[in-house]
Length: 323
Length: 253
Image (cartoon, rainbow over all chains, first blue to last red; front, side, top):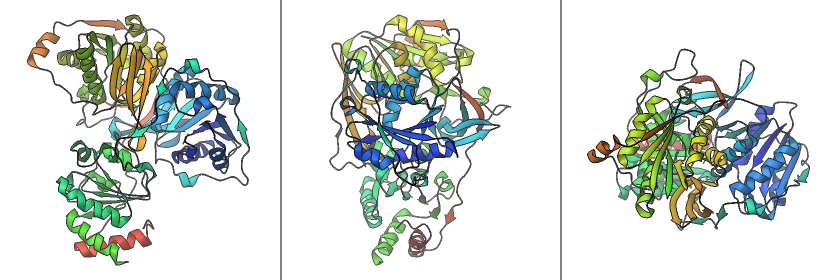
């Protein structure tokens, strides 16, 4: 049995949960049941949404002490659920929240955890999980060691949310019987906040126009904004643009910024350092514009144009406004 | 305040990997090393906290003899002394093994605060900090962009996804994983390099019975997944062709 841990915030499902489910269905093949659990408080809508997937059970881990996420609260709750359902694998999307508690959970269970997994392989009869190493220069197939369950987090965008098999009827929903000792929750969280007024969650964007060093100066950000608007896209950037303060840090794509998998990702003057590629290579369609035909961004691009991004931007805006 | 900073020695960003004979690890003799960048930010943050609150900064690292390079560098930048858990098997060790190797020696020191980078530039598990905190029985928080200590209370700013942040408070002792860019790094001065030579590095053997949690069964270069369609012509022609393909072929507009 495989247990998938879905993630929600304020009663809204994080869509990366579907990617973890897709990975679990791939690992399970035929015959291995999958259960999906979600923790928080007030979970009926999220649980009903998850019940559409072809899973044997949806487990709502509902407790007022889980309403606001803390690593100590989630580890306590999940430890009890894992003990009661005895899965062979526990799978999560590699979100910031998963990163905050999954290693603690694995250590408390004294079990192996493989993070940031991009593929599931069978290497000579051994189940191994492919994950990037050395900033993406290499890929390692990792076989987790020791007794089950093995914990696995999957890289955002590595598995397709739309690949999830839906069930013939809604899966049954149960409520986990857990107790949480609030005295042992050592972190006292405050309400999340945004520093910029118009902050966006780029991981939820359908189209993204992203700019890199090739944009040359802060004044040219306006061109990129017009292009993004013409595409109906969110504007994003590679790290150097945000380090320079030309765009806020929250719009940074890459290993130190956000990981995205939109329908369309358009890169303008981005060379494609691996730190950037890991944040966007799961996008469905990638368009790259760069002066340098050898730029690594073209290795992941579906469509490429070698040329001057400003001339192309003007032509594209005109073309998009035609229809 | 007694602060520990855990640093890892990792291959340089410019290093081009070559595989060993059985293709399960890299040829270590080809590697040039440097301090893991997120750990450098953790070191800088620990030095700033010491400047504000007093106390000492102790560099802790697990690995073969070669990791003394980055320990010396941390001492040159201003750390007071170092703890090196030395064992050749710790070079390619997974995060759980590294944390288990350091935990007993660090537990004895009774640190008030432990900082480390949010992940390493080599294996990138992003597990070491939370596992070490669990082994030491102290609370943790990850991906931290601001650290404020008042008395025995710690208030930190955690980075969330999508431009969101959150303040979290907890009691000391605690462990934090630090995000790159939290501060501006200082570099070692000549005076610092000279002073580092006299600073103490305590070497400790790795505890017995460490068991790897990961076995790398294959290591390989990533495969190019896509055939790129290069679109040519004047800007107007290329724009027209691209928009057509995005509408009709990719269906994303």
